[in-house]
Image 1 (tube, one colour):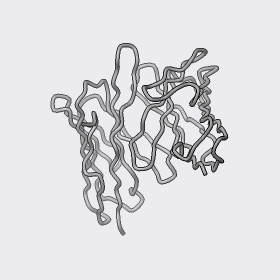
Image 2: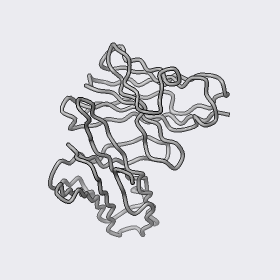
Image 3: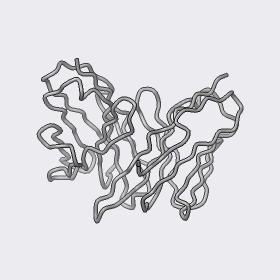
Image 4: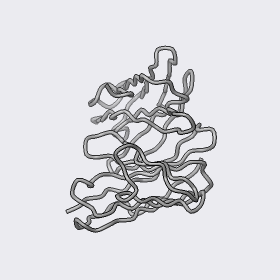
Length: 111
Length: 114
């Protein structure tokens, strides 16, 4: 079982729909990132969360530390939101920190 | 936040050759990492690039295949040596600030080995 599980793997929506992507993790973490990966491979960090909720424009991210679960919501989705969304968690082993990534959710928003 | 410039963005290479990927950061970052993303897979950590010393490699990755340099706090290189088609992947560098509260990513290098 992967340490970071995302669902769904693929998501197709119509423009304007409300979208939710879920992330569950099984390890202790210091923080969680939501990332956006474009077709060329480049990655943009959308949010870093260690508790609660954050909002940036039409994007909202929440995290429940006790339940080891986070969600990324997109309101009023648009075709330009089409990308792979990746959940990643900071884990540490002694003094070594590393990001562990989910497999990503491929979002396609149709006009 | 820091900006990481990664070069090249893509390359097609002959098997048996080597490719060096560079990442330049516009400000000092505490730690730098190199990842590989094979087709259809999640990002996997290759190694942590340590400034002025040997990189720390994850299980399954070795220095002879993936030599890494980090001469200062703003620059690192990853070389993919003696390439085979199985090395065709996206390679990505990232950096983090001291408190691990921010992560910055390069644009990725899409490597195809023929």
